[in-house]
Image 1 (spheres, rainbow, N blue to C red):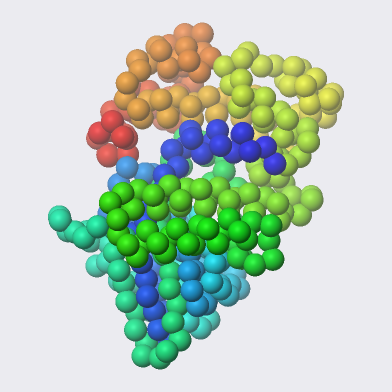
Image 2 (cartoon, rainbow, N blue to C red; image 1 turned 180 degrees about the vertical axis):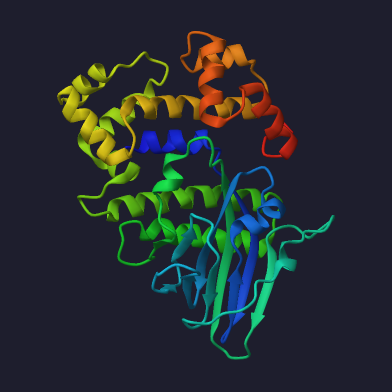
Length: 333
């Protein structure tokens, strides 16, 4: 897999973490999380899309996705699970349990205690499970090829993988920072969450069948992965289909067919979408002028850039930036 391309996308869609809950439980217990979009404005108001993850630091439990035909997953100490599509889900001491989501826990009053906040789900037995639960935010528009390529649930088991030591260290740090509540601990946990998500994606890609399609399958393919790497490494270059095909070692028609078969859109369309995602990221920063951004992403004129941006996104760049800042999804707010 091409790690540079993945990192490039994660930067452009502004992946960032936030950790909020340190959860102690005793069986029987159940916690039902609502769809992330229902609480996103309270958790991460400057992100378009929010996804939740859980680190099992001790004990065991079950995770299931609500509304999808997916078997419950048993989780053990050291396991990490995430829900990239923001689905409602359940964590519980036994499979099949349900409860009503508690929206009050997402109401953070002024002067709230330092995060993460402690939750106690006491079922009365001596069977304990401890979790650190957090959230990751990112942009979903105008173009996030990674998000659409991920499944509803991602799971890394702590044992039986080459990354077991990494996960053990992650768990150790998560427990230490959550328990000691030292200054800056919530920031450290947030960054750890971002790193953990990258590791989750890597694990998922490595576990894909050899014949897998989609953007992630394309990253792993020798010819399509090379083309994606080139497009992301030099997005402002005046690429042609012939040039990319030559770099990939295929004929023009064979390359176009293979790229589209994996990624879902033709190479030149992908390049345009990626350039406009780069532009959206720069617009969100709120500093550069429209003309500067147009030049930076490879457009010959501000007018050509504005036409392409409006055609894909539905609004001119200046209007889109103003709306984004007004809605609170821009750090320039």
